[in-house]
Image (cartoon, rainbow, N blue to C red; front, side):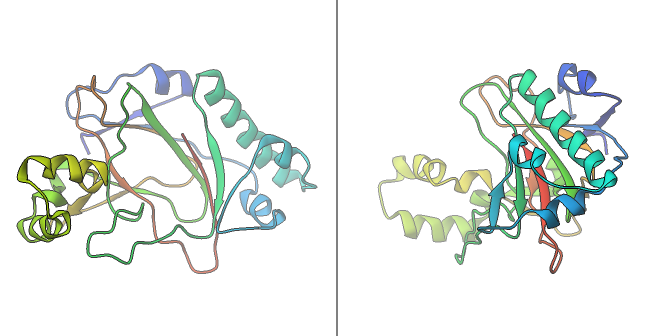
Length: 223
């Protein structure tokens, strides 16, 4: 897809700017090591658990697990050195909205920031995220039936409606068009995707969390 550009290393990933239709950069990687061993070695206390470097270093791992740990620590450190605040999570599942207009992460959405920034993410184990070409998505608040229902929920003066949509993040969510073809981000690839911020000169990247594979946790780095 012409919205995706592939790069060959981390330095290229951070130094390459989004331009034109390109709003997703992929550092394509074939990782070594057993990431499933790390997931299995950590006892989950809740559905989403953040893993820090100290926790990783305390694990007793096989040689393949150690290789995976080295990659995780290196990725965390290189992003921190870039000034990012990466978070490594083991995920059983996210909360889902039981609502006519879900705003959970399983819905295609864009990230918004008041300052210039990008979103970095990498899935090491389990189901991986999807992105959607902007031309294949419709902003949900522009769909007449949904907009009408939101207006009922708002039940206020017309001039405040757009602010209401933004305050509750409704405007960040998109519905795939018929025959839309989401693009899976794959395992091991480090991605940089465009966010909605005041200085951006490209469209923000539409993305979503995947439905988890039955009985399989995800290992995800995001910032």
